[in-house]
Length: 429
View 1: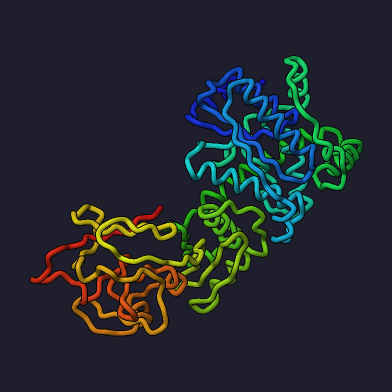
View 2: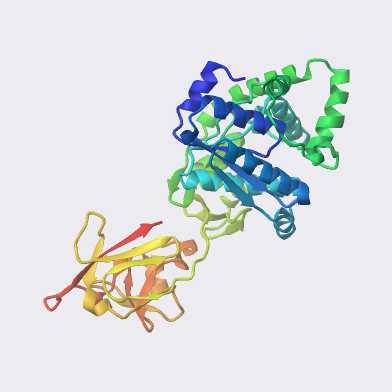
């Protein structure tokens, strides 16, 4: 079913996750992998959306049972898509697609697999491009899906649907039929079953022509993409310089897309959102806008920062040396100095202090410096407002003793009376 060049690309990966629904296309993919790929190098994920009642549970169980019979590891995900869509204002199609991609993204981010493999084929590509056109997509949408986008691997993308059907029939591959495939209430099904056949009546060679358009768009897109890489990444943030946002609009828009991709899956980020980010560059420093999926954009002194920061409540008490887990960070207080140790303090002066977020009335006496409000310290140290609520504060009452990511207070400095030194580091989880 796949030529040797595609098979060799698949075999380069150490671990892959196959997204299997139980339908004909995905089962042909699973069967092919079982026949041609070492089973230690892939596993199956199947998502039950809770949209089709008993039929959905049947499909999930079918995939699980097939994997058991053929010695393939299987991970089943149970999702309440109706509630997810209701809470976020999504259509069923949109919500299911977004949640699936979030699951896929987590699997790759957690290093469980290097890619998630889907069974998208050439007819799916044509449908996707047409849907993008009807929605008013830009040149990126004309490119359609890619063989490998860094998250999803689509080995069947250049394979004709009839070839897949013939492969299933020749090998007697079992599969289940999703009854919603015949329902035109869903956008893609309406396109597949009603609109595309009408277009083909009027214009022959639709698939070939759309795929040719896709290839030409990809060539133009790649050129623009090479010009749209001027951004800086720092953990959960991406900085775009003002000069880029003030330049050619197409480059500015594409740079925003690339930047958002670095900290999010960018599902359904619209032109409206992209243009709002560019417009933010003309606002005063500190201005911000909210974006989908927990993203936020801030105007900085010399550009725009895209951030995925969520407020975290910091709680704890210093009780000697050790590791203190604080959300997605770990505070490390060690007896021994390491290459990662950036600060040191008197451990005995720190013992018993509370770990928390900042509060009104906090004061901080800088190391060998003056006493001032914590807010003034943040301002003097040019710590961005968007970061301040998540700064780790270690204090007794309103006296801040340590800001482990930045500086120690003069109150806990090492002096001639110090008996126990704590070497300080903050790690990201």
